[in-house]
Length: 339
Length: 262
Image (tube, rainbow over all chains, first blue to last red; front, side, top):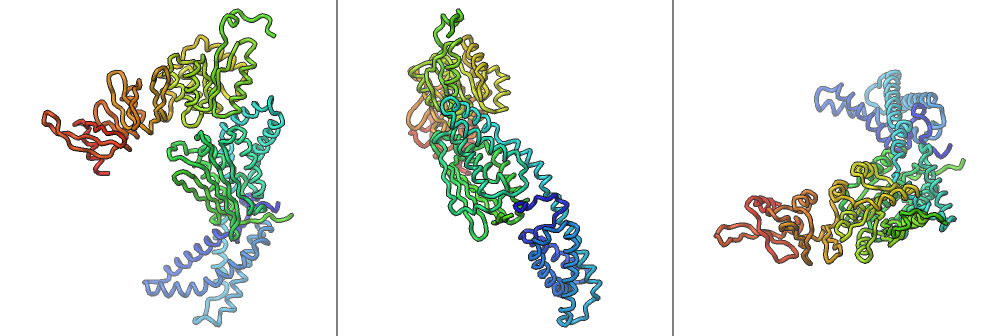
């Protein structure tokens, strides 16, 4: 179970406190609350500035300390049952508040309010934030998007399935060995397509799947389909959402290779740089397409899954030049842990 | 083997079949199936082609009775190829083959066009081939309605051969009596089409400058003022790739303004 991030149902997971998107959200929400409090207490712009400064002096140290502590404790928190995790986070916040109020007392000009009042404010804010992440987790829950995902999965191009079967049929008499391995590839591919794909899986496995898929396409298209792999520097143990690359290759073949008589190159370039995994796919492209609805759907689906798994830390960018189409995915390098 | 050949098939020459599919394994599969038909239904494969252009070239050299035509092919889809086939001296019957295309299947049913689903079953292939002897080639009207995207080529009949003209190379189209003259930078062709229908099909690419003339928007180089013999002034359109200047009718003068505004 070590190789999954969102394997739990929505109700039982604290947010990933090491995720940049989560940290940014906490920063933003707490600061907006501080601003609101300052506005409430002030009468004009000058007092607003003073109020904001005073509130910040109290809020920012606690905020920064909390984020550091939560990020540090993230792995421990992850392992706790949800209710216990919530309790630990609340207690942690109250403890930090107490510590700061003792340590900070000499630094403040005015006499601070009683500790109980800070506890109340901090407790309420923490609870509100946790509730927000709970709702957000539910909205982005794997259960929900898997329903969407399955609707999309069922739409793997039937065109591909039937044409592949037709190609295999043609091999049975002339080249039974090749027909066998083609059917094995097809079975593997559909096993993954029909599997529960909520869990992240190793990049090496996704690449293997892509290989099998391209073998099948090569069976049909022969030398019209040329494939270039640049994966020497690929981080094999990186965890990625299953089927993050295969649908993109399917698009590349459908829109880039099949409409051409002359051979075309699909290139796959995977590498890691500064703790990020990059995947760059390119295919030939002709600007006349009104048939890109299928492409957009697959891209939207992959974007959604990347967001679900990695939030703001993953991006997917496309670029069409005169004769090539490129998809560039950047994901955080999440390593598979030995279990 | 077949000890009691049916009277019908015994008297008829074998059916000549051309296989058109862009995927080699699909052609191979079709060949195998046709060989399996052999016993009851004499069939002879007259050739194989990987795209529409190659198919038309083969047919110019060696006619056939029926074309087994894949629908989804690069450059020119099967529906378009079938329309160009109608320009042959003796158009063959056509049986479409497709792996999956909900839209096309429905349209085939509506227009009673024969089709096979891939992977193809021997029994279905036999049925379709048996029907072909009595079947007429598909109707131009039905094929036009099956066509989804504008055709990539127009075709002209020239000395018994079908000549393909890439639409991208056309500079202008001019209606004359029964035909339309198609002008490319290289030469002129006569095609049996209606200018109105061409205007509908390629509304994006061509613009009407005169009651009898469509010009390629991309080929317009400018306009020139000219006086007719009667002394009335009118506009001429200048086109890339051809010397000729074509008159712009009074009714279409707005395109001159539209052009200068671009």
